[in-house]
Length: 480
Image (tube, rainbow, N blue to C red; front, side, top):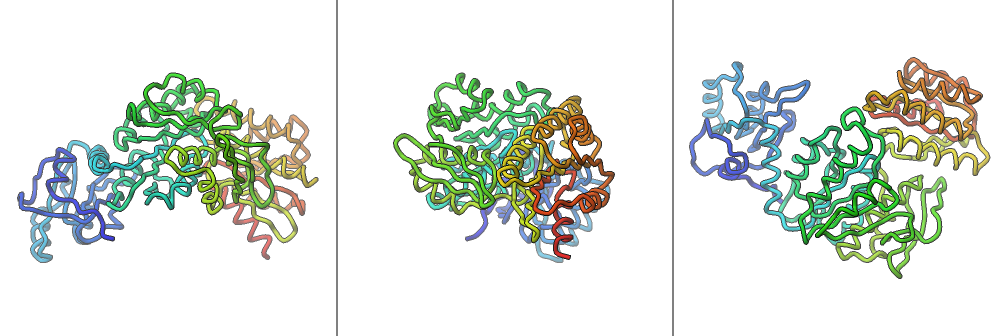
């Protein structure tokens, strides 16, 4: 199946830009890219200005690789028009150049233009925790009934969302878009680009406080997803277990609401309890009079909530509960999200190093501690800093430290300037082994010195802490 073809008129209409090079003859282009390393012949290159790189510095390079149209907001001195013309004549291609006031806005405008021709459901997914897992679960539930486009990886910001939508092809019949925000106003931009018809908000927790300030502000920003849904046609998927979201949903009007949660009055809920084991998480999902057993290949009760939200989306779109459940059995968790790795000596490493905030940290601690004590094994927490918590950083790390100490771990090992406050709270509570490491190598050495065969170990921290290096190091040690 070929890629969507863009005409010159499409580009100009979408961006409102000015054609400053190339004539108005009919021209077509094979795709849009912002990455100078991945340009293909016939592409349009949008020169974004980032913190570390400016796409305008690579204009000649992308032309040499075959780009046939440039979208810019300036022409740098290093860009030699004469060289471009000579290059063009040698390749028998003429570079078109469109000038816009802001290339990042132009990227969003192009994505919105492409989105405007799409008539299928567009599911927007946001929340403090569980966005990526929920996006993947929804995609799994819809796959088989729809040809689904989703964000690759975690392309969920004001660059990733447009780039994801620009992958929309004529054969797609549904879109699932994860939307991440960390500053006020970002959700306004994302919903204007994506125009979601279904809105899923996983939960409201203390995350990105540095940019968003408070849980109240986080809720106000994230629920903009619901308020952007088309009146009379949209659907909000509401987590009744979350007090912020349950309350906010009461202000919604002229859209459908499908609720989920462990509360028995939710439209999609659990019949009985949630069972966790080394093999994963299982429960009976219930919708009306229908029931079906869900088996997830990941550890943690919170994943049951994510699954319920995915089933709720499917039910709204006409997919029976039993079908959604059967499809979820094929879902594979995102790497480094509560992955259970069993070592030869019987120890279990729970790799939850994908990211961290206070809510996800406490849930992971509760889950792993419960598993350790069910098997009468020691519980060890290996924790890195939680980032982007602003002035509340120390307070929230101490909060996690106290919650961790209540679970009576055998050991707490920390890495980072703020995780030391978790260690301090553990020390105050009398945790037997508390180690504050200076770096990854120091942490691995300390773990080796205090190794307890058969223990359950949780490894978690914010993305920038690279805590997966600890997991990799422990596995390598176990294999030698």
